[in-house]
Image (cartoon, rainbow, N blue to C red; front, side, top):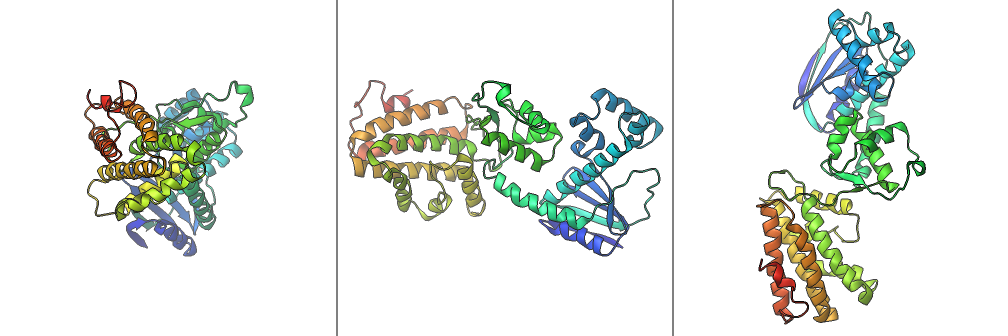
Length: 409
């Protein structure tokens, strides 16, 4: 039997189920970009798997769990290549691991590869019937259906975790809220991930360097975020070279602007301040209203990011989603400020505009020449001018270095 083609979504799970039900013996090769994995079936049972990714390799898993040292791994890898033997056999012969430990990690290796495969959104597969030479190999016996059910559970749980960590480009840092290590109770895996969080590595870089699978890392991130040990680094660069659909930098700036407004009106409006931001959406054009439908400055920033990203991804007619988002947020800020003026009058707007100036001040720290930076500053400049004109706010009201001094520099 020769079976090949492209797959998307859960198609790969169906292929594994088919090979299991038909009790096939052969090799399934799955590729996605530069990654390749091979799954070996013996009468419908998965007995072995291999992958190009280093985090799926047997020695890498053992080294990360402290079962063997880096020196021992390097020595055994060299011998395995020289003698053309399986790494696991060398590790047992050298006395570094027991046969039971090897079996345990061999199973873990196969499971890691398969879970990674089932997380792939698309790729290409090819299955061929073949006789397997399993002599001298320590094999596992895994039921594909159990793996598929567990993978489905992980996918569902991961979708919840991604509400807090919506993309793997985010950078986290230590919060500084815990005073000593004695106050922290973490397992070895959590300590491993925590040691890699330094305010510079992205979530994806930490996944790659840790050697753990994506699901495990996201769970650990959620755990240490919930305990207050780490927090997201807010200063995300507005960088034209980033590409893709990462809107976190834009959201950070506008979220700070809108939180500034809310802070200024909270005492006067009380609970009504929450609804002020919802009511202000009524004046937006339909597309902007759809994108900001689930947005609120009181929501967790990652929930806001996920909602906005999902809405923008569904709008195929928008040529430049980032430019659209900046323009949409600016108009939203105008509507909110108008609503504040209508309810509280022009005097509270003076302080709000000065506080917005402070927020815009740190935009100047971002990379010079960024198209996003220029658009945010220019759009907000015109927005503030419109508010000034509509509510007849004196340009010179307030301190000498007022709101318009920012734009005269």
